[in-house]
Length: 367
Image (cartoon, rainbow, N blue to C red; front, side, top):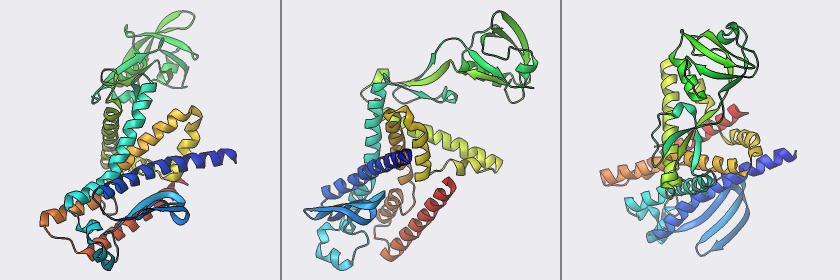
């Protein structure tokens, strides 16, 4: 029970921080262009706490999974807008409207930059990345390989090539591969390049022996490898902007991964990985439950990555999101006249309902 309450508290705290920072961006931007702000709220539902400062009420509400800034001109009674014409967002210029709408994602990006800077500072301005990103060209840094000790394996898989070749079925050292000393990253790539071919492994346990092994067509030989190398992005030569650069690189890496996933799904017709890769609050709970034992550092990393995920999601051209609302403003600027407000409100409301249905479906999937 205590573990459950701790997990819930951490999830609420992470979501609360992300929402607070996002909505704070909208609030500050609205205040800067002198738009009238009625309420700044964290959460939905009944109020738990509220305090009015100037014209704006600041409130904390019961359901912590969201928040909003109530700005004049966003669905208010026309008579109220006539009473405060200078304070209505509807009467501001297109650039000012976009400024308010993009301020939320900007603040989420700034939050990620700050968190990543201190994470990098803690890890000597180096962070690990997936072994398959060796050819990635990071902004403001470089990919380096770090090796630790000899290349070893623990056990073999029965009826797989290494087992059939008679290798010791216990922890042993891979001294060389076809006469070359390789680390774990190089070894996996070498196997992939040698599919269906025979390689010679020099294996050392008490003594060293060479074994010819035929690599499977899947690029595997049935060996439980112990990684002795891993990839790092090194920002040592650009420390001041490390957090900013890593945030940009994170967005690029997400784009690469999404492109691979959707490309594979399109080619195979199997969208299982696409659906499985989408999670909501319950998915976040499961992540926190699995990773919190590694300490507060990993929770900060989760917060930073989620903050950047919010940036990407909110910039999608969906009318209920910031990106969609920016798109509507750009259309108004191009045609040089306001859109029909009833039609605009209908489009936004329908897209919001669809988003809620999607979120509910994701929660059901996570359960």
